[in-house]
Length: 131
Image: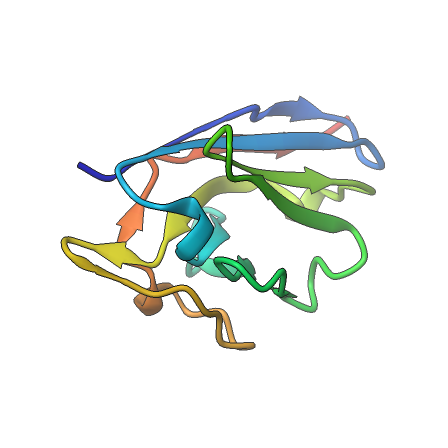
């Protein structure tokens, strides 16, 4: 059974940093593309990053490029999102996701990060940027 569990959300001041973690299980992180998304109240879910399974390629949304860094540890089965220079408009529920659904999985990312490419999702973790 595929599982993704985010942690690390919380309250942070503008300009601060926060690192989110996502524990994964039930699929091969080494061969599966994973991504981070967020959804703010009243807004559509936004794709932030997509990291390919094995070739080291990560694509970022323009809104977070240069401020957010996605990484993963295949041995620990964990995915991370380091967030720096946080702003109030970064406030949202953050989700990790994997391109796996049932027996089907995909290891490569498209430069345009689309939620429809991801078949498995975590429950989300709240990030609030406020003074």
